[in-house]
Length: 309
Image (cartoon, rainbow, N blue to C red):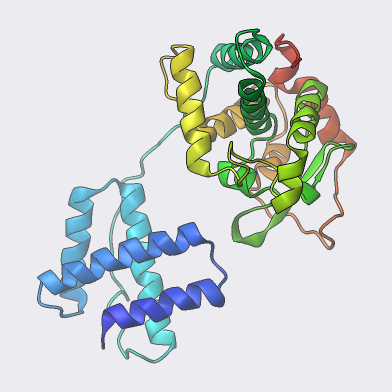
């Protein structure tokens, strides 16, 4: 059995039949290539002994969360080989490994830092020293940050958001989440919705050209890397003592709603941690309770920022 060739077939199976996203497939590939390299360096014999040696090796080199993922990747691969009758004995059967659970708290951005960041951007946009082109780019950056904090959306979901799935009049967007699951989010703050409306007005031509709501300075869909670099840059501008990431804004969204005593079931639904069933792509289901929660309890409502001119 040629493991590299079987890995290639397995990854193709994950892409075409299981319809896994690109990030997941790349993670599987990285983990499996590492496992196959370990086997090559240790005699290329696939049995419980070499698997246990591999487990010892990765336990010594990685954090437990990463170890769990790597083990899951290898188990899934050998499960596939067994199902396809490529192997008779699965070396991952009855492999035991113990984990001491680590408690990792989500990193959030303090409220005052979020407020400072937004004020900085609104002031830059209103500055007479900025050219019209610079103001247009800053408007885009404001729209990105406001959207991340207003909805708790993942950066991958933000970059993949299509304009046709964003009902600006109602302030409702349809998100294509992990595993192809859909969920509907609402913009509960009128200042944020106004900024997004102004952004779309300024970028209407390029948005209509390729359909993606968020674009870069070259008129192409905004990349996750560009959004992260943008946040790092502005964090340095305001001399924040933390490095701000898009996912920290997602954690902040959830944490601050929890602090406002929002029911956790609503937060789970908005974050996409539980499935949301939909029948039509342009149909949205939104309760008045969720709409009112975001209107009255989201911390963005208490921030005095300013308007884009």
